[in-house]
Amino acid sequence: METRVLKYFLTVAELNNITQAAERLHITQPTLSRQIMELEKELGVKLFDREKRQMHLNKAGALFQQRAMTMITVLDQTKNELLEVNDQLSGTINIGMVESAVSDFMMRSVQKFQEKYPDVRFNIFDGDGDTLRERLDQGLCDLVALIQPIEAAKYNYFPLPVQEKWGLIMRKDDPLAKRKNIMAHDLYQLPLVVGRRNIVRDDITDTLKIDPNKLDWRVIINLPENAKQLVLSGKYYHFGIYGVYLKYHDERLVFVPFSPAKITGHLLAWRKNVQLTPAVEKFIQFVADQTTHKKI
Image (cartoon, rainbow, N blue to C red):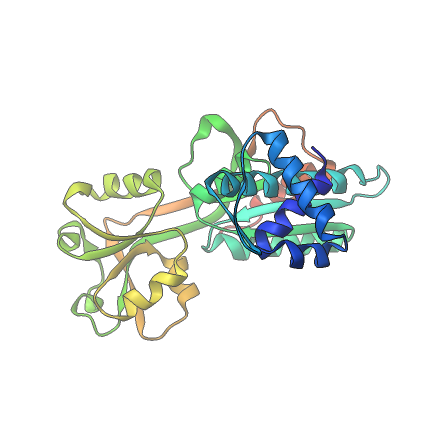
């Protein structure tokens, strides 16, 4: 299976039209149709449902699309890594990070690193912890900055000098907004918006001595931005971190911390037993050095 054919397939999957795909790829329609049929024959399954001039991915095609995108991405990253030279640090570092206060620290580290090594490029991917771990496991990210805790057995990691306080984000005119702290019993019966990482959620409820089965987890999210409108409606409370409140940057909202206080740290993690590129190794050491001089 050639990468050229994978790119042909991805183009057809994007456009749902063999004629338009052939025009974009600068090949003839019969050639493209033959390549797609040969690919299906090689795989032993049909990838498209064909209706006149339209071609739509079926279930097998949707799965293969995900895998093909991963293969192309990993191949491109590998090509970039092989172009690195010994006498001057270069290449691309793929970093994933959660949307929290850690992003400010990591972006400052990226800036300082590029000032020292201008030939190194960065690809930054924002996501929740589960998505970032999946990308790390698939080789799409070299490093990920996550909120503690993580599944320690799978990764190498070290703590970052960034901590987050947990609490509720709500409308400023809500009666609870006048409180200095939110107690465990206040959370019962509240319609809550919460991130999907169970390991983090369980850690918080253990600290607060809350029975998670008695909480009304009304909406589960991966990234917080879309939940902002729910909180602004006054009918939901975001069970989250102060860093998300800062990113909302909305004067109509307030953050009230939990009592007892729950503070969570961050980690920079990478896969075990994987050969890292010189650029990634150098950046890990660079960030580790930064942690000895900075506390947030």
